[in-house]
Length: 62
Figure 1 (cartoon, rainbow, N blue to C red):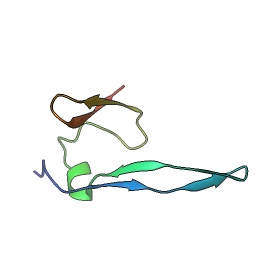
Figure 2: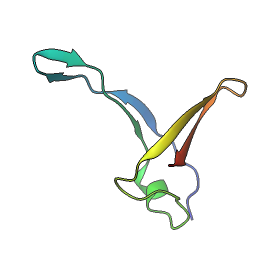
Figure 3: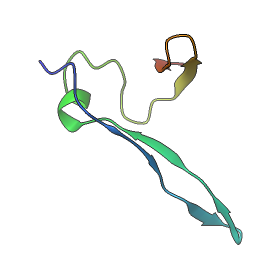
Figure 4: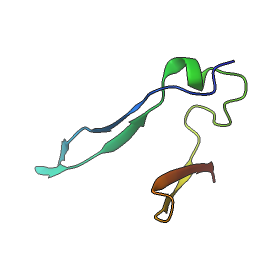
């Protein structure tokens, strides 16, 4: 069981209709995402919340 790992916050700028847009991703390590306890499925929509008090983000199933 792997319930912890190191990921990355990545920006992959893209061009659409001649304009450049930022596209941000959070990389989840494979061993964490494939763990049977991981609560999300591939392609599942999520809700992202900013917890300013504790300086963290929360990612939840929507």
